[in-house]
Length: 269
Image (cartoon, rainbow, N blue to C red; front, top):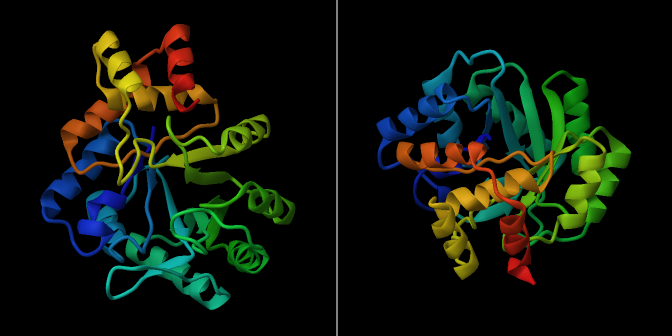
């Protein structure tokens, strides 16, 4: 169970947080609670989230993995824009290094922003080649892919070692079922973003009924289902609340009986 830092910045992932002290406290509590993987990006804010991570946690404890994303930038109106040219990617890597206060990035996910809402087909050869060159220079340890199609994952794996794939996936959005299983067979991590629905929270009568029966929250059930979905699933739920953070982390120890798993599996059918 990791922690997604996107929500630490301002409204619409733009500008500073309303309560900086609370944001710093959530980060510190997450790491103190055993979280060893933080997902971030320098285009959150922009720059805000990485600077908060540095202020809260630097110098970073051994074993803490910070994964970031490149391939997008923010417009002055808070719009999401593609930024995947070799020059833009190199600048983004250096921005992440500077704002996080490190000399090498643990994981850099190439975020494809051809379509901000849905993955769109297209070659990833040029941007991935640029990241591989930065990896060869020692600035990146591992490369991942984000917001990509099945075909783009296959193309990426032909070009270099892919450590992880980060796509939208949750109880109600399961387009990547086949991809998850393929990656699991090859020991590649799958990191579902919006595990609780993101900007449109999960709403399901089945989920509500199951949570009531198990005497827990719907969010904990949804996260526990993801953790039991496949051995390569790594979660990064985000929150600005310590209470919600602890609730999310409690899903690590919530077993779901086989009959409950079957009930939840049938939600999208």
